[in-house]
Length: 162
Image 1 (cartoon, rainbow, N blue to C red):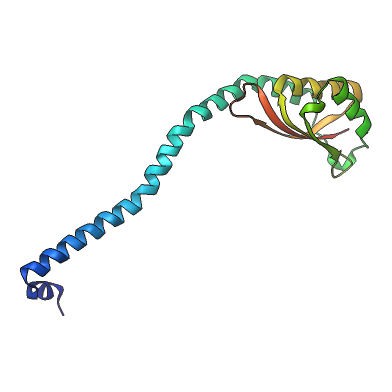
Image 2 (tube, one colour):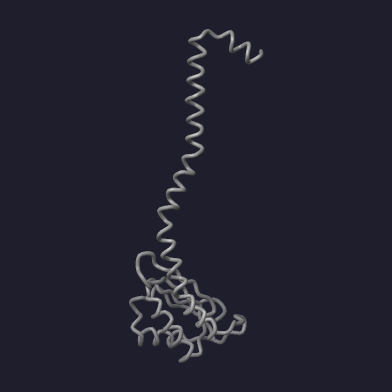
């Protein structure tokens, strides 16, 4: 049956009810389509100030990271010598960083895994400087994350080797 002839066979009241139903369904479909976009847009606008703060903090400390990378050469992890856990623990104790320490233990390839839950970025740089100068221990890999509301505080996962 032809849709136009079907439509014309309906009386006025039926056509009005069908038209209103189609209009309501169309509005509902449009709303359900665009509502997630509006929510995500709002979430991103709310997160933008914190992201800008994080970016400026990272840009401000890029020089510190570059100087640290320049001090430590690229390391072939297959040729690592054993690193002493006790000597690293001694440096942590001497620098009074025990309260910041989350984890200290062996990792793969005779390396050591050090996790700081919350540490000031300059203290972290000072720690890596002491490791390099006193023990010839280098940072093989680092995952450093800025803690949102705390200026200069980071979470750090360091993989250390010789």
